[in-house]
Image (cartoon, rainbow, N blue to C red; front, side, top):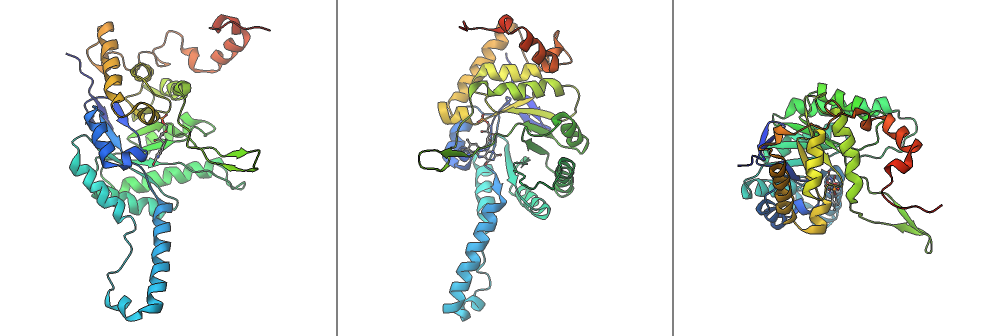
Length: 337
Ligand SMILES: Cc1cc2nc3c(=O)[nH]c(=O)nc-3n(C[C@H](O)[C@H](O)[C@H](O)COP(=O)(O)O)c2cc1C
């Protein structure tokens, strides 16, 4: 009997496949399909501070217009206030009541006080964990890396002071030394690091000379970046590693676990192959374990990480040098020059 169970930040999961935050986990029907397909947990789409601020602005405009026409009505109905994050929180409560797998909330705020305020509110919705989505683009030339990183550590620390559920951090890959920053998050008590978020990049239509907007999905080989960092970090930090980006098939899940992840998060594969694909991924994971004679994830988790790999140099600079000096050795295709 195969045991695919794992623990994510102390939360027991029946298997390591988590449906990551996206529009899909912002829809109850899709969430139910994801649960039926066998997902171990879901991360609901992020609550974005912009959403809240935008709604607040709309309310202020509404109130101004309303007050001009009907000033007495506003004083008669002081309870007429904007829902703000309430809508998201009510919906989140509905999700936690409707599914039996663990639900993790996700937050992307701007100001330190908002991170803390909304983290507390999200916990009240009954979620088992909270993911801080540190997606931000810094356009300020005066702001250095150290102050940005310190700001993020401060947010984690402040959030952990107000919530009692485990807290993960979803990171971008753009840190000068990601493993240094991750070790700081680990020391600050993060429950898990999600490696990595994918950025949506701008593009330009050269015929029209205007902006183009794409919501591109990941490519299958993108998983190699989280694989490298899972391999480098395994057994060196105490928090969980959740690999994300470019994980499409059960075989990719096996690779992440071998590198040292305790869970994976998937999004693009759900958009491309449907929620039911989770079932196929689990089947492939199980088939592989059987073929190897493994009965539980702990039998092979981290077996190919830097610490346990017979060729640990694959995770570091030596791999780069070796590849560039001996390209023929690694080429799997015919080339013509
Ligand atoms: C349509 C869409 C919506 C997304 N929304 C969120 C979100 O609300 N919060 C978040 O942290 N990540 C969000 N993401 C990023 C995904 O959670 C994930 O990190 C990224 O797509 C990489 O994983 P993948 O390769 O499996 O797609 C979104 C991605 C897509 C494609």
